[in-house]
Image (cartoon, rainbow, N blue to C red; front, side):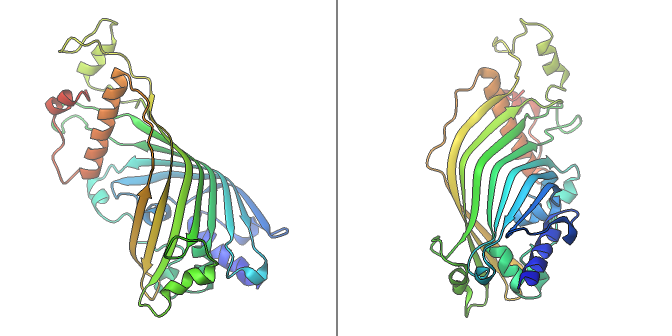
Length: 318
């Protein structure tokens, strides 16, 4: 049984990691440790369901620890994966046509490539994942010269999530043993996996983009301390601000697959009881509006016209 479990874990880790071999980890007392790992960006993108307009350019894990239950309970108790830090960089695709097409046709690690729902798939679906810190850097392109107005670049978003926990439940979002959790799919034409995601703290900071002030009209605003906008308001340099402060929340995730274990559906219900937004300065508010404008353009690039500079000025984004 131990060798079968080792092969099942190897199968899962090979899928998620860019390079991995069985020799990289050995179990000692039911625990295995790995460090400095590179996650496959396309695999993460297709599994999490990021928008096609965004690519995962960097995905790194600091330290990873795998905790096994007793061999006799491996089918009813979850394997626990503990990660100290996960660093992600999401960037807008430079190829508009590529961003409109599916980012990846690779199945999830528990999909078995449509070949059936075997032991390794059940082990992967039942895993509990604990991550101490998740750092996400989100960067969109804004508008370059010749795209309907002056060039502009939105600020980057730095998202920090602390004490994230993902675990398997039954259809009522209650923690049960893994065999009971799988009972819902019995005598059905589909395979269902129910997951609950919890996090203790989520914060979002806006950071100035290196190309944020490419427009000559905007750049000149910072050459003198007394530079003012057309409405007479003094423009102040934006050096970065936090606009979401430490919110906690939960997500209820339902995964649906075919009888052959091929991906079919993915649903997420978010529950956030309270969101604290610190007071923003005038340049911080401008940056926030520019960020949301840039995100809108990113997600709709190629299907809608880029907002012209006059509209951006009205919104205070330029």
